[in-house]
Each structure stands twice: as structure tokens, then as C-alpha cells.
Image 1 (tube, rainbow, N blue to C red):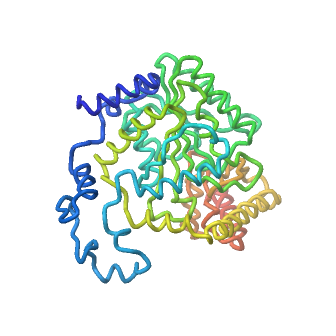
Image 2: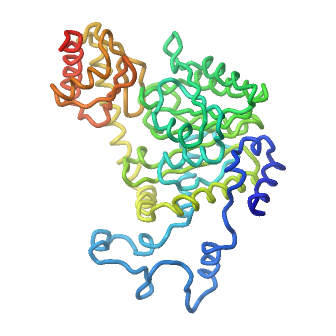
Image 3: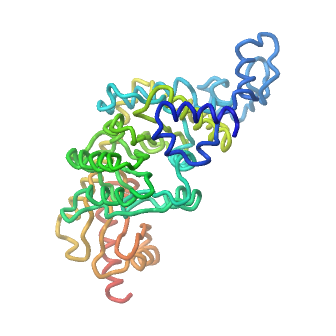
Length: 433
């Protein structure tokens, strides 16, 4: 094993032995080179005051070389903030500003240790890093039965982990914390589990309430006290889009410092929070361990980044940083939030109106981009196909009965027509069309 990797492992094992036990074989082997192109280039950037012939970019007149046809569309930005490589961990100022934002929006983080967020190529990349560092063949990934299909690819197909599902809702249509607890305790024999907590949930648009949040944290603590090492991942892709009385913070804060066997990891990003899906800017943040352990985990994360994408896109990081620092940012974000909340409220109003009879029910939703219908007497895939072919409407079929509808991309005045068309397609399918 490389001595740098061994040094990081020794630090983690000494500071947080349970966290060391959570690492995959790849997680133990990975490291960020300290003697190489990046480190030598960084040293040259500080000391080479005559010629810096280290890093692989081209310069002209003291600035990164660039084409006028590109720069003319980006004239508000200095070329140095666009064309140079961003550091593997991301722009330092962006990392600091994002951490400040997290602390402001999550008061429960006050007093807890956490790393500086590391920039990822959006949320999927952050989850992939978690999978590489912590998921081994046969490890359990605990998640609700209503989940984002990419988890299976990221943790199951890529890393060989076993997807262990529990029902998202209990009999009272609240979050099924007892199911989560049972799924965790079923892994006692292996002594390790990865828990994915995605709120607002994709596909249902559900965020637990405050008491439900406490139950989730208690279930994870019970597992830890039973001797299970828990990698607790909060996938906060839709963070902030809370439209009703639910948790308005990430559970990451409550998980930090919970137990020596619990490693909280927050994966979030500007992608959906700031409506910049194509910019691909996300973050991964570790919490609840010692400074030395957090530093070692950061180095291993940078090793994964270096070995896969090298670093994230610089322009999009610059754009996000400028937006976050703008005095107009809060008001503009609030305006978009109100639009999204209006759409969610209108959907609920339609569904509760009695207009659609007994052809469907719907799963509780209070946040995010989506909601899910539970169709009665009609196959979801058949309804999806009928909607496409006869009504020009696209939806997502999930299993036999569930149909996901993204109200986020439908203007509020058009929502009634959308659900009328869905209803007609359900009736068509039930009639054999």
C-alpha cells in the first residue's frame, strides 16, 4: 500500500477507529498524491516569480489563453476565473461561502465539527464518491422502497452493495422509522450499513416532520449502540423546497456527534437548490469526527476526485459563487420558491377536490419537485404509455401502481389540464383502450 494511503489510514484508525472500519478496500487504498504535478504546480505558483512552466494550460499576455468567440459571451468574468483548472477540492472561496450558507440554514450544526465542503460534479458524483470510499461487495445500503433509481447503479452495480429496502410510509402514512430501524438491525451480523436519507424524497416529494426526524435519528443511534457502523448519508438534492410543516433542516446536523459508530455525510449542491441543473456543482461534507479524521477523509476524497474527473468545471463554480455573494440572491430565490410552493399547493387542491373520484389516491407530499399517484385498477406503465400516445403527456411509471408527476416543470394554470389528462388516461386503461 502507498505510504500516503497508510498514513491516512493510521490517522483515521487512531482518531476514529469505527470510521476506519467503514472504509472499503478502495477507500483504504486511495490517497491524494503530495508529490506530483498538482503539488509541484502549487509550489511553483507561489515561488516561480519569473517563469512558471509547470501546469498544462496555455497563457497569453499574462492571462489564460482563450478564444474571443467564447470570452465575448462571458465578458463579465475575468479569464482567470473561467479557463484555469479549478483545484480538485473546488474554488476555496466557494467552499467557504457554501459552508456559511449551510450553517445559516441548519442551526442544528452549531457547535458540531464538520469538514469544509468539497466541490463535486453535482449530486451523483458526490454519492459515487461515498460509494467508492465506503461500499464493498455485500455491504447493505438501507433505503426506502420509493427511491431514486440511480442509487442502484451507483452503489449496487458499480460497487456490489446489496440494496435493502423498507416501506417509506407506515400504516399512518408517516415516515416508517420502525422499518428503517428493523432494516438496520438486520445487518448486525455484518456490523456495517450505509443509510441513504433523501428529503425531500424523490419520487414522492415527502419530507418527515420534526418528530419523525427524531425517530429516524433514534433508529440510527439504536443501530450504532447495537454495534453496527453506520455511514449515514443525507442526500439533500432538493433542500430548501419545504412547502408545509415538516423538517426545514437537513438531518445531517442531528447526526453529527450522535455516536462514534455513525459517520454523517452530507451530499448537496446548487444543482436544484439554485435552479442550475446543467452547471453540475455539488458538494460533499463530512461531520461529527475529529479534525484529524476529517482532514484524512478529505484527502481520500480528493484522491477519488483526482483519479476520476481530476477537478470540477471552473466556470460554473465561478457563476455559483457570484450568485451566492449577490445582494439580489435571497429575493430572487424566494421568488422562485413561491412559484414552486404555489404549484405544489395547487396540485394538492386539485387532488383533494374530489374531481377524480376513486381512480387514484396519492402519497403524502409536502416538498420538492414531485408527487406520486397510486393508481386504482390501472397499471402505471399502461397509463404512462396511454398518456404519451393519446394525450401528449410524459410521466414516470414506478412499479405496478405508482405514477410520478413532476409539478416543478408545469406552470400553475396548466396543472388542472395536466391532471385531467392523467385522469382520462387512467379511465381509458381501465376501459381497455
